[in-house]
Amino acid sequence: MEDEIKKIKTRGLLSAGSLIFQSSFSAGLGFVAFFILTLKSSTYLLGIYNTVLAMMSFFNYLTNLGLAAAIIQKKEVEDKDLSTAFFIQLVLTTLAVVVGFALTGYLFKFYKDLPHRAVYLYWSLLGSFFFLSLKTIPSVLLEKRVKIYKVVFAQLLENTVFYSAVIIFSLMGWDIYSLVIAVIVRSVVGLITIYVMQPWFPKFIFSASSAKSLLRYGIPFQGNSFLALIKDDLLIIYLGGVLGFQKLGIVTFAKKYAEFSIRLVMDNLNRVFFPIFARFQNEKDLLKKSLEKMLFYQSLLVLPTIIGAVFVFDNLLRIVPGYFLKWQPALFSFWFFSLSAIFVSFYSPLINLFNAIGKVKLSLYFMIFFTVITWILIPPMVKYFGYQAISVSFFVMSLSFIIVVLVAKKKVKFSFLKAIEPTLLSSLLMTGYLVLTRIIFVNYLKNIYLHLFFSVPGAVLVYFFTLVKIKGRSFYLELVDLFKKRAG
Image 1 (cartoon, helix red, strand yellow):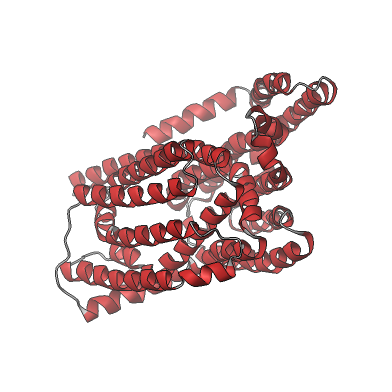
Image 2: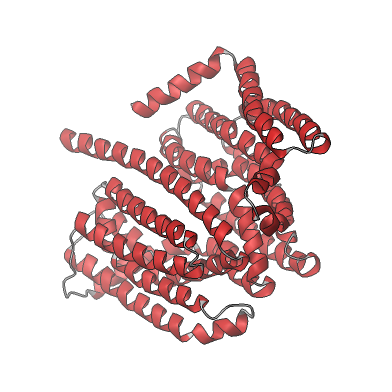
């Protein structure tokens, strides 16, 4: 038993480390691919791709039914359970793909500015969706055996192939076909890789009792993601038809760049701190300290990155010939998405906290709240003020972080201001420096290169020197303590 625990612990550490590496590497490579896509392709392409991915998420929701979670949750899994789950998902996926192909004609009626060649991207994603369903059981078996690092490696290979194809074929000027090729290659490589790592073949078994047992757990579990589907993916599908793909592409550009830092930092920290919160849920003092540390480390990276980007983003666009002219309309949205990203980074760890300490209903209530205000606010704002109002709406909604903080303080007696005070004060001083350099080098000297040269490294120095001055030696000791815990 002791050897088994050690084995699980080793696999868990491997999985955690590989997960963080994979997400960081994929995010970096994805950033390069996104930049090249926005550089070489038309504005509308981002809107098309974003909409098609949202449609695939919709199909995935309808066919998943939480079967993977149901298998992982079961203590003892038999061949009949695996084969039954496989055939249920295979049938549902096949039906969804057939329906998807049948709906092709209706897409051109709803999306008036959809170019005909976009249909190949839609079809390729339908095909990849089918391949995705074939990967479910081998992936679940690896996760159940705590070999998530193998699943992560497969995802890393998929993302590397996908983004590399996007980069190469976009540079060759293949426009939308670069995405078509990337999607197809990714799905094939992913399928082969996962079956090499975990060979599995279904047996011709279908058990009604197994199906009932799996669906009894899986459907309610899958229902938890229904609100996220309505809030995010359904909104994108709606906006693609209302705004047109060119304007949706501008919004996508702004949102992607504005949220890059919080996706990279926040998602990884949430993964790392979730088990810590769960472990300390009955030890209030340790839970309080862990939460305050997470808020500190998250704001340590997110605040200066977003604030710095707000001041230099427009001049970064000007460096690349033609880039600023193409994407200048996205600047307004970028600024408001950036501000909303700051507030989202404040409340996201608290939602993570609710889930970790068993207050799942609180997370559900907040998800309902966010979904309702999204659909109440955005459609009329878009109707009366146009596509730029989307980012403003996101900013207004993000201010609700105050409600999340107040509710979280009732569950855990932590100090929100104490946690972020050092990084907030350092960011305010850095903001003053950035305002000064912008006035001098942009308004008076009209030199964007001098502005970038003095702003970026200068802001970094001002921020960290101020932070060290405020925190003193404790800042260094906290970093050492964090790495010791991660190593242990």
